Image 1 (spheres, rainbow, N blue to C red):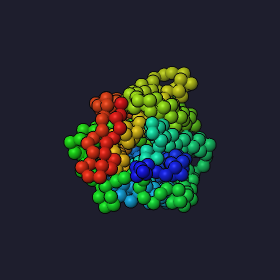
Image 2 (image 1 turned 120 degrees about the vertical axis):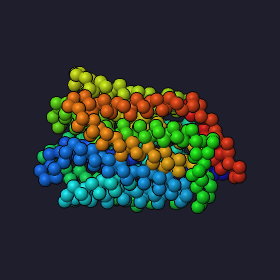
Image 3 (image 1 turned 90 degrees about the horizontal axis):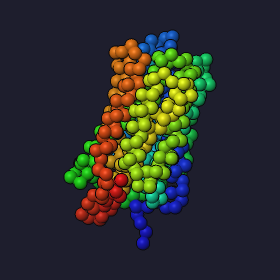
Image 4 (image 1 turned 30 degrees about the vertical axis):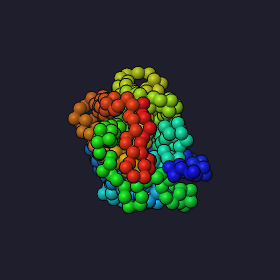
Amino acid sequence: MTHPTRPAPATRRSALPLAFLVFFVDGYDLFVLGTVGPSLLHHPDWDVSPGTLGTLGSLTAAGMPVGSLLAGWAADRWGHRAPMAASVAWVSVCMLLAGLAPGLGLFGAARFGTGIGIGALAPVVGAYVAGAAPKGRRALHLAVAMGAIGVGGTGCALLGRLLLPETPFQRLFLIGALPLLTVPLIWRAVPARAETAGAGPGRVPVGELFGPARRRGTLLFCAASFMSLALLFSTTAWLPTVMLRSGYDLKSSLEFSIAFTIGASLGVMGLALVADRGHLKAVTLGCFVLAACALFALSTPQERGLLLVMSAVAGLGSLGGQNMLIACMSAFFPPRLRGTALGVCLGVGRAGAIIGPTYVAFATDLSSSHKAGFYAFMIPAVLGAALVALLPRRMGPAPAAPSGGAGGGAPPVP
């Protein structure tokens, strides 16, 4: 007897490398604004202030809830192929517009559009990888795939280190349009229909997420996603500028950003191996704690080498917390609800991505201390740890659906 909740072997083999490629694109687009931030502040014609930079970061994030909610729902209803291909194409076109924008208005609109595409990718690709992962390796496969976000960010920061400030920053956005070429590959590699056994076309039971069996988990995941994304987007948008304010030059500040992204991409894979051994909740909690401690260390005078290490640890905690939260959600929600659940929780959480960069801009404007930005980074990390601690130690399976039994319960999340 075949199992409708498992993809075919060929699909399983291609899912991880394809997801890695897509999340690499996601990471490049996510980190590019932080990389060019110092150059934007010195643009001769656009009159960009720190507050404007924060607004641009929030504009990017403002489009994300729209993308998350629509794409997660679409993936459960029609499959992963169409929303994934459309999201990559949309992001590429918006990056092209940002690179060609003659003024700040069109540039901001392009960043808002980019946010819609970025917001769509996490729930669609995350559900795709979770459904294709071998038993007992879901957290590892998600970590490897989403580790590409840090790799893409590293590539962006390295390009910035190489090209800026001598080269116009717009070229980094034009490079971000190249992923349009991958759309035919996505269309061929991803199945037309969802691999999971769902409620059937046209009926995705969103209300089940807030029923008695799952309400508490859904609300906690929404709140934790808010804090995680506030932390991630404030650091990616502001870390080079905050380091610049602490007395480092532009190239040194970008080196800290490179260390941040390397820590985010490499360290998470080791944590995922531990998480798959039955410690998913503990690893998720530890990521938030690591981020808070490392960001505090960055605010203190230390040897340059130690500061680079702490920047890598901050990246590990910031992106790792987000990755492990997605692994927790993928375990908690049954396959037929997984895309919708990730879309809703990440969509609500995207409010943190919207507020985070502007909140850091306000904090740095309010205080003349160079430590203000670091303390602002720490607050969502501490609150995120507290929310993860409130999750049940073992989230047992929810009751199965009365008819069909498709995807009845989620495996326990330790």
